[in-house]
Amino acid sequence: MAALFTLIKAIPVLATCVIAANYPPIPVDKTTPVQQRIAISGANAISIGWNTYEHLAKPCVQYGSSSAALTLEACSSSSVTYATSRTYSNAVTLPGLAPATTYYYKIVSTNSSVEHFFSPRTTGDKTAFTMSVVIDLGVYRADGFTIEMDQTKRDTIPSIEPSLNHTTIGRLADNIDDYELVVHPGDFAYADDWYLKPHNLLDEVDAYEAILEQFYDQLAPIAGRKAYMASPGNHEADCEEIDYTTGLCPTGQKNFTELHESIWSNHAYCLLVYVGEYHRYGQRQQSSDAREASVLWALRCPNQQLEFLEADLASVDRTVTPWLIVGGHRPWYSTGGSGNICSSCQDAFEPLLYKYGVDLAVFGHVHNSQRFVPVNDSIADPAGMNDPQAPMYIVAGGAGNIEGLSSVGSNVSYNAFAYADDFSYATVTFKDENNLQVDFIRSSTGAVLDSSVLYKAHTQ
Ligand SMILES: *[C@@H]1O[C@H](CO)[C@@H](O)[C@H](O)[C@H]1NC(C)=O
Ligand SMILES: *[C@@H]1O[C@H](CO)[C@@H](O)[C@H](O)[C@H]1NC(C)=O
Ligand SMILES: *[C@@H]1O[C@H](CO)[C@@H](O)[C@H](O)[C@H]1NC(C)=O
Ligand SMILES: *[C@@H]1O[C@H](CO)[C@@H](O)[C@H](O)[C@H]1NC(C)=O
Ligand SMILES: *[C@@H]1O[C@H](CO)[C@@H](O)[C@H](O)[C@H]1NC(C)=O
Image (cartoon, rainbow, N blue to C red; front, side):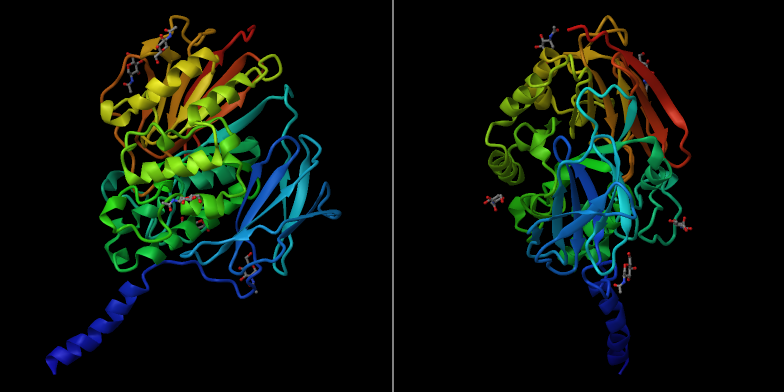
C-alpha cells in the first residue's frame, strides 16, 4: 500500500518532468505571426521573416509609407519547417524601397498589427548612424537565462515572461530609436544548452525547440523593427556541447537545421562580410559538426570561404563606402589566454583584413566586452587610434546567456578595455567619413562603460 501510494504521488511529479519544456502557448488563430524579424536584403529591399503555427500557402506582407495606406503587397511561397519544429518559417522580400525611409508593414493574417521599419540607406549616404552589436545573447525563462555557475552575476528574476526582461534585449528595446540596425554574429538562443537543466533530460527535442521559440518571441520587438543581421556561431552548429559522434544529438539539432531551414532563412547571410570561421577554420574543425557545416557552407557559398571573403572585401569601393567592418563569431584577439583565441582563424583571415584596410573587426564567443587598439600579428599599430594601418578589434560577447560571463583573465598588451561584471553590448557609430565611435553599454543601466573614437584618413 505504501509503495502504491508513493507511486501515485510520484506520477504528477513525473508528469511535470515529462512536460517540462516551457513552450509558449499556441495562439487560437494559427495565422498569428510570431518571432518576427527583418533583414536588409540587398539595396532597396527588406526581407520580413515570421513564424506561424500552421503552414501558409502564400505568405504576404502589405506595406506603404503611411500606416493608413498600406497600398503595396508582396507575397512568396516560402513557408518551411523541419521535423522537430512546431512552427513554419515564412519569408517575404519587399523590393524597390525608397532609401532611408520609414515604411509601415502588416503581415497578412486575421490577427496581426501594423509595424514599421527604416529602409536601407543608399551606398555612400554620409548621414551619421549607429548600429548595435550583440553576440552570445541567450534567452530568459527557466530553460535559458539563469547563471547558476555564478550567483553573484545572476539576474534575480524569479519568473520570466517572454517579454523584455532580458537586460540586453530590454536595453535594445528602450534604446530602439538610437540605432538603425543590429548585427549579431552568432550564438543566438543557446538552445543546444537545454541539457544543462536536469528536468530537460527526458525532453531533449521539446526543450530545444521551446528555447528557440521563447528566444525569437523575446527578440521580436527588436528584430521585427530593426534590420537584424545575423550569422552563425558554434551554438547554431548544433550539438556543440553533446558530441555529435556519440549519437546523443537529437534529430533537428544537427547541421544548422534551425538556421538554414527555418528562422534565418530570410537572411542572405552568405552575402554579408561575416567570417563564419566555424565552417572551415574553427578549432573544432575535426568534429563531425564542423565537417557537416563546411558541407552546408560550401553548398550555400560555392566559393571557399576565404575566396568569398577576399572577393567581398575587394568589391568595396572605399571612395564611396569609406568604412569597412568585418564581423565573425570567434576572436583571435582576446584576454584570458590561448583558450579564448582561434589562432587558425588568425592565420587564415588576418592577412586579408590587413590587406584590404578593414577598419574594425567585431567578434564574440568570449562572454564579456573587450576593446583592442589597432593591431596586426599581435603587434600594436604604432599609429594607435590616429589613422592606423591595422584593424581595430572588439569582442562584444557579454550580452547574456545561460553559460554566464567569462572573467577577463590574463591581459595582453594591446588590450584597451575589458569588462565582465555585468551584461553588456556594443554600439558602433559612423560619425562621418573619418571618425568611428565604439561604445560599450552596460545592459542593466544603459551606462556607457567605455567610449573610443577611431580616426581614419581614408585617403586610399
Ligand atoms: C492574437 O495575437 C496575440 C499576440 O499578438 C495573441 O496574444 C492572441 O492570442 C492572438 N489571438 C488569437 C485568437 O489567436
Ligand atoms: C518583465 O518585463 C515586463 C515588461 O516587459 C514588466 O512588466 C515586468 O515587471 C518585468 N518583470 C520582472 C520580474 O522584472
Ligand atoms: C546538411 O545540410 C545540407 C543542406 O541542406 C544537406 O545538403 C546535407 O546533406 C546535410 N548533411 C547531413 C549530414 O545531413
Ligand atoms: C600582419 O599580420 C600577418 C599575420 O596575421 C603577417 O603575416 C603580416 O606580415 C603582418 N603585416 C604587417 C604589415 O605587419
Ligand atoms: C591591459 O593592459 C593594457 C596595457 O597596459 C591596459 O591599457 C589595459 O587597461 C589592461 N586591461 C585590463 C583589462 O586590465
